[in-house]
Image (tube, rainbow, N blue to C red; front, top):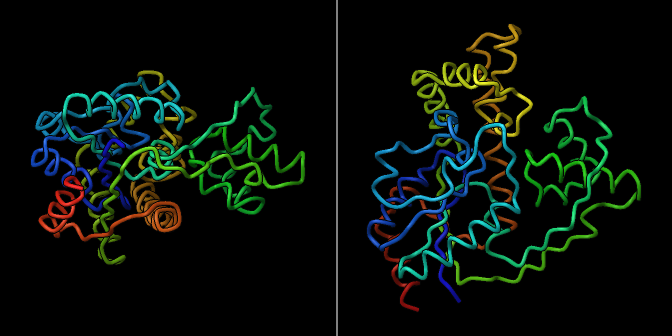
Amino acid sequence: MQKVLVISGPTATGKSDLARYLAKELNGEIISGDSIQVYRGLDIGSAKETEAEQAEVPHHLIDILDPQQRYSVKDFQLQSRRLIAEISARGRLPIIAGGTGLYIRACLYDYVFEEEEGEDDPCPALSNQELYQRLQELDPRALEKIHPNNRKRLLRAYNVCQKSGMPFSANDKAKGEPLYDALIIGLTMEREELYARIDRRVEAMAAAGLREEIAGLLQQGVDFSCQSMQGIGYKEYKEYFSGEKSEEECLQLIKSHTHHFVKRQYTWFRHQLNVSWHEPQEREKIRQEVETWLKN
C-alpha cells in the first residue's frame, strides 16, 4: 500500500508549519486538506500560507478555484487520490495537511458517495448553519460525515429524514476499508491555551486586512451566498457589510464560532480516525515516529 502522511487536528495548532518542516526533512509534497484554501483571494481568513512559505516545498490544492465556484468532498477525494499517486510515482512522500476531517476520511478510506440527483430545497431561507442545527436534532450521526458547508449533502440528509422518517445515516455507505498505509499525526494542546491562540490569530487577521480582503471580494461580484464565503472568518462579516454589526462584534463571533468548531473537530477526530496525538513543540519526536513508520 502507498504510504500517506497526514498532519491534522484542530484549527490554529500549527499544522502547516509542521507539514512544511516534515516535507523538507523527508522529501515530501503537501496536499492541502482545507475546504477554503482552494479558493483564490480568500487568503487572510483561511490562514493560507504565504507565497514564500508555499515556495519552500511543493503544495497542491491551494488557489485552484474562483470564489464563485463550488467544491465538494467528492472533488477532494478524486483530486487528492490522483495527487497521492503522482507524488508517490516521483519517489516523494504525500503529506495531507488540514483540519477538514471528512476530507481526510473520504480520501484515505473506501468512502462511496451516493449519486445525488437534484434535490428540491425545502428550506431556502435557512442558512447552512441553521440547516446543520436541524439535522443535529434529526440525525446527529449523519453529521459526522457531512461538512457544514456542503449544502447539497445537508439537503439530501434532511430530505431523507423528512420523507422516510428514517435517519439518513441508516444508509451509510462508508465501508471503512483503508486504501493507504496512512500515519495520521494530530496536533493538540490545552484547550484554554488553544482558545487564546485562536483569539490572537483572529486579531492578527483583522490587523492584516481581513475586512479589506472581504470588501475586495464583494466588489468582484462574490457574495455571502457563495460556498467560499460560508467558512468561519468570512460569513461573520455579512452583518458588518449590511450595517447590522460592528467589526468588533464580527471578530467576537469569529472567535466564538472557532472555539465551537474546535470542540467539533476534537469529537470528530477522536471517533472517526486513528490519530497519534502530539503537542506542536514535540517536532523531533514526531519526526522520529514518522521515520520509523516509513521504514516499516
